Length: 199
Image (cartoon, rainbow, N blue to C red; front, side, top):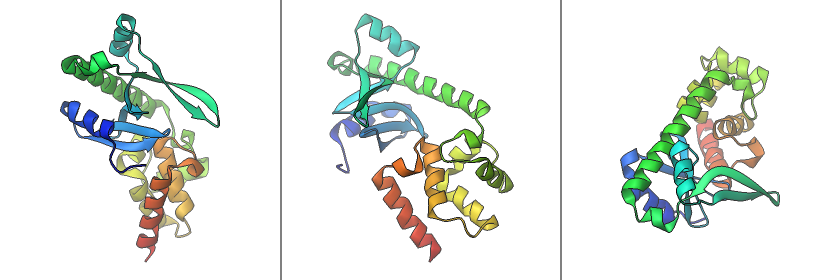
């Protein structure tokens, strides 16, 4: 994939008032995030906003296509809706809907933080949850905030045998991927960091 994508860059400029927008590859496209909260996707050169009450209301007025991606050849419908050409031409309305999508995503994450345990995340077992507790990482929110690398470094202080697989597992837990399904560029960056850290 290209390093920069025109629709990603255009969306970042158009929605800059939301905060610092970052992008990462996911589902064959790009997830847009503010402070690691995903509120939109870019897929096939189109922007899709996360479903929320405001987006749903707009979709009643003007039907919006859902985001569909193929997982092992099977179409999967995600809870995101395509920004049409009319909405692109209404920057204030687009901003309001995007802000609502971001707020809804934040609210959902807060609820998830409260109810989820570390062992409920992808790749994390009860044993890993206990190890994370041992180094002071006792909640999903804390794990998300400090990230995979810092969490791994903390784990290494109590268990020197923890290796690359655990680093990848932690990243997958944070991003919602099985460790084996991490995007190739994320895996490559973590492998390079791991090798550098071991020197």
